[in-house]
Image (cartoon, rainbow, N blue to C red; front, side):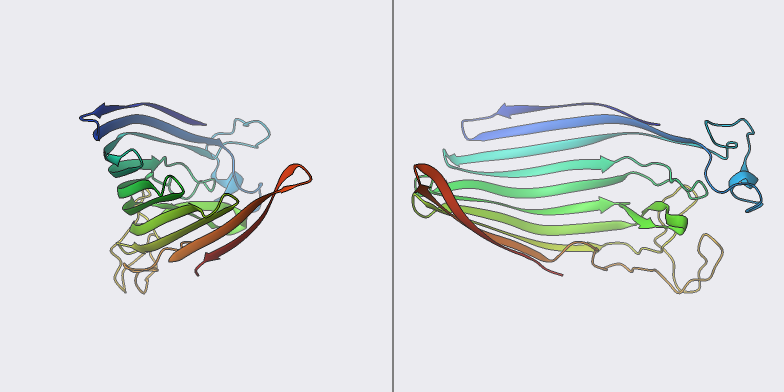
Length: 273
C-alpha cells in the first residue's frame, strides 16, 4: 500500500512590465508498506519462504506472513524563478528548483528499503522569436545535482531490485530552432549536450537503512562481510543510459493536392553512445 499526500502552491509577482519573480513550495508525506508472503514453499529452504514466517495466519492465498515493512518520509521542496522580458518576442529566465521520488520497499523482503532520491536544478534559459516570428530559438543551460539516485537491476529469481547509488551531477545544454523558411517549408532542429558523472564512489552495497556506502577502499568489507577490491564505480564514472550528445533535424513541406492539404516530411535523428 502506497500513500502519498502533499500541499503545494506558487506565487508570481510582476515587479515591472519586464521583470517578474516566482516562488513555490511543496510539503509532502509518503508512507509505503508491504505485507504478506514472498519466497518458496515448505521444504525448499529452512531460512527463506515459509522458513522465515513469523505469523501463521494466512494472507489471502499465501501460506503465512514473512514480510511486514513500512517506510515513512516527510519533507519539503522549493522553487524560485526570475524572468526578464527583453521585448514582446524575447525573454530570459533563471530557475532554481527541487524534485524527488519517494522511497519504498523491495519485493525481496531480505533487502533493505530504498530511500527517496532528490534532484536540485539550476537553470538559465531563453525563449525568443526573430524575423517577424518566422524564426523561434529556445534553449537552456543547466546543472542538476542528484542525491542518492535510485536505479533498478534484475536480481535473483527475476525479482527487480531497486537500490540507491551515491551522488551524481548532470551538466547540459539543450536548444531548439524552428524556422519557417518559406510559406510551405518549415525546418526544425534541436541539439542536447550532456556531461553526467558520479560525484561520489558507488561501492555496490548500502547501510542497514538503505543509504549508499561511498567509502570503500580495497580490502574493506561489504555488508555481507566479504572483502572487496574497491568501489564498483569510482567517483567521476559517467552515468549509464545518457549519451553525451543528441540531435535531430526535420524538414516539412506543405502543398495542395486534389483540393486538400498534404505534406512531405523527413527527419534525421542522432544519439551518441
